[in-house]
Length: 271
Image (cartoon, rainbow, N blue to C red; front, side, top):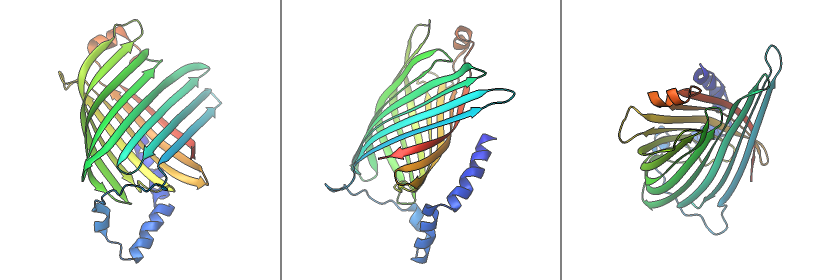
């Protein structure tokens, strides 16, 4: 239901966005459908081109009535990108209360290093850590390195796939830490990936255990960004996390749920 709601929100925004209007303008300049499928080789930025980016976003919703609830989300991004080498650090967190009782308190931090080896291929290293105080997850980290391939890359669409072996560490309160090797496979699709005015992004992680494919995690995130004025923008999205866990995990922690989702609306500052 939430996915359908987001589609209803995204479609009219996309159709009326400045970025979409730009495609129509290009259409008058002999724009063709094949332009959407082209791979444009990245050109290394010059000394005077912008390479550093900072984005800070936050959102807050308060509801009063039969039930009182407060929800806030916050995120930050620091990125260096010269079109050949990318270094990125980002964080996403959420906090919520229902009738003055905390029912959400979690966060995820990710670090990425990407380097173009040749043509469509990149080497990358990444580390992702998260916590969730409601489910008593004190720390989980997955770290690894692998390869990324670009299927489509141009001003209108970017699609890539990446994969890596990772070492996962997971620790819950009053439980011994667990470590195992996993695969991490990620797919990403973006509309207008290089536009500073409007963009849409979707990515999905699939993280199965190497020993048991029935033990896996998934992370999906879909959002759009629209520039309002100057450095201010608006971001809205939907994030869904799923974890199969195992029988023992549910016995040790009855607060666990397989699915956890967050819908967020944020005001964004980009520098």
